[in-house]
Image (cartoon, rainbow, N blue to C red):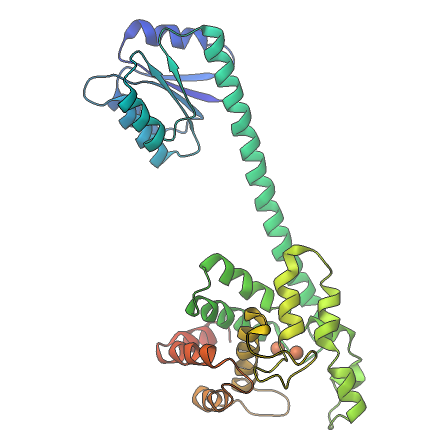
Length: 329
Ligand SMILES: [Fe+2]
Ligand SMILES: [Fe+2]
């Protein structure tokens, strides 16, 4: 059942309002602005019908307060005056759903309330569906990564470190936070194409032959294929396809150059190489962060985007990299 907050300093009006919404709703009534604010601070309401002109605390103030503390609640203004200026400020500042002039036709107000609550319910359903979808797509990423785990030397902790280096680096190059977090999540899929690489090649202890290298180098495009066509995974496809491209155009599979390589791929490439260098692998001991940065720095402009290298060095200097490494060890 929806909860309506009815606000009017005129007792008769308040009684009329309460009577007309007695059936089918839970009603709360306030005989003044301050009383309405007190209710808004302590109880959740779905819709507010508020008188404009009240002593001390007026309707605009009440509805602006509602916008702050319960923005999802629908705001309807009751006005007995044709005071255009204050009406305008109410529409603009309190984002009201509708204003109704006094005296009102009961059916009109009823209908307005029904319509408003329908749109509120629809919005809530949409929000819920969006949250579920978001959870589902995040879980899919983790599922895919779990499926690929053990296929390569890449472990869950490698993927998490790459994820967080990527997010930090993306924010450092001015990608907005939401997009940066998404990029981090998608970075976990950078080597998903290795699912298609035969174990005999992936796990071969000796040097790969030229032919085996050719097969190995298929994993970026194999990954992009595995990731399908859904727009949700667009960035993951860019990362998979582009994380072995070199800034100077000497990488694979497409020999893309400079900013033709998608930003996400340029970022993840650096995060991935840095993590591979600074962690123990079956064939090598971990390098120090400084040694890894020196190598990366020496390849700024050849393997890596020099601007991203600069930002990465800043993340090292301010301790962000060390913190991530420590957290996801
Ligand atoms: Fe790779
Ligand atoms: Fe990796």
